[in-house]
Amino acid sequence: MLDFLTQPKFPQTALGIEKDRLTAISLSREGGGAFGVRNGAVIELPPGLLTPSFTDRNIHSPERFRASVEEVMTAAGLLGQRSWSVSLPSSSARSAIITLDETALQKGDSENILDWKAEQTFGLPADRLRITREKITSESGKARYFATAVQLSVIEEFELVFESMGVSAGLILPRAICESNWLISTASYADSLLISSNDEGFTAVVLRGDEPSVVRSVTCSPGERDDEIYRLLMFYQDRFVPNAGETPLERILAVGEIAPEKLRQISKEALGYEINVMEPRDVGFVTPGGLSFADLAAPAGLAVFGM
Image (tube, rainbow, N blue to C red; front, top):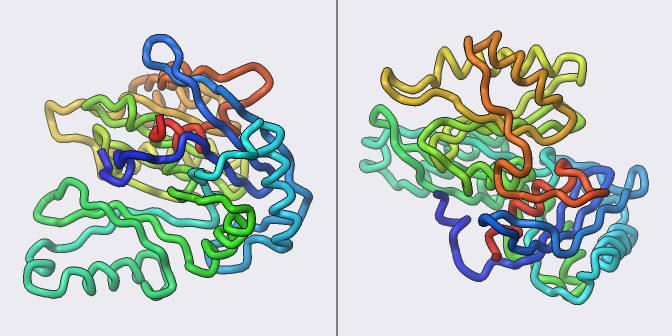
């Protein structure tokens, strides 16, 4: 499991930020090791208040955004909480698997080499980014790192709002990585796939056991989504299928407007077998009436690590 997700004393409350809505949540422990919602609320953001972007300004009115954050925290009964984890919109942050030759790392300055590779991957100078980097299992003589990046000017927009409220944001991660925590916390030896849909398409994360193995962001219209998921599964089959004797892709967790039955059909066409499409209860989350898993999955996935 990724070390930065297992450190102690993470906040037990989490804020989910999307282009058109905010979610505030704290969790309770349910029977059988599952988690439920102790406090939770979702509100809509005014149109045009937030434009998620990796390179450009996100918050167009800090005062109105702060008022919206206070509104959702109040609605959830969590306004007095001072420590929070935060999930950012998919377009505000990026994630990738960075691969380097191990011999090159041994010969040179590893930090400079990793910064250079991050610049090539994320498209901005390393000194303009806040990068979280974690070494994962090497493959074929290649050192591999799971990395997330947010431009400093972007993360500062959000942090200044939180600071003005007296709120400490201890862990800030992209939405899809937060959602993938549900698969990490229930990891098996088989491969698992998260498909997180958004306004611009979807983000896919393949987990091998409890480590990210593939991270891909796909830009497409809703009408093109099924075809793109099919292509993704074919790509997985051709390039990342486990070696003979190992367990192939076994589970899919879909977050957003993706019908489970359609996913089963696509997986059977692409891979030749029907994948287990997970429901929230299958990953240990009890969704309350009146709130959707799509709204709760990312912030709740962070709040789990404070429990």
